[in-house]
Image (cartoon, rainbow, N blue to C red; front, side, top):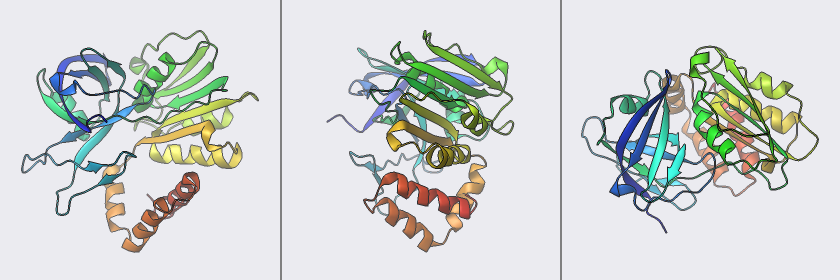
Length: 295
């Protein structure tokens, strides 16, 4: 079994667009880092406590659950896509959307060649069924690295319809070539600059009657509304979609509301996740609670 945590060293920096910065990470500390090969593969970057300078890490089980040693300070981390993995020697590209107030973004903007950061073993969620003949890929700028890698790995016979929200035309990226792919860029949409149109797009795009797959990544409330549509209107089974909240608008306000939530409600949520019941049904209940309390 591969190690859970690795020390990565900054090898290079590249400004991809005005709103996206790429860091290439490598070094001897990544020699045992393996890849899942999954298109939306992600990992977490862990940062030291601001006051003490001490790095606190969770205990992560093989199924991805986190546990925390008693009395340990809060863990400071951020989740990012592995845009590209290269072996021998191991190097990874991680793309950062530039924005105000982000822990990892602030680090990336200041990072110099030779700086180090601790990362964990990557995981992935995208799981297109073998019989899928098409896929609908919808995201904002935060999902662009994953969308690009997914497209890069998509077989030639699968049709890909893509909609990507970006702040401006300057934030478009050159996507990997695919003979059966079409992308529509949604400018001045979502990304904290304007209301998102992702839900509108998913609700309006005509879907083929043949087997397919839907992948969506973006702001968590936007994705939540799309998930309702996919489950309640399209009535797709879970193996036909992966809908992921990559970030939270007004995150500080969300954190404050969560901290103030009745402990009994939190216990109810935890009991649901640990119940062993259908994960999608539990998520329905969880998201209903979030919506009820303005989260």
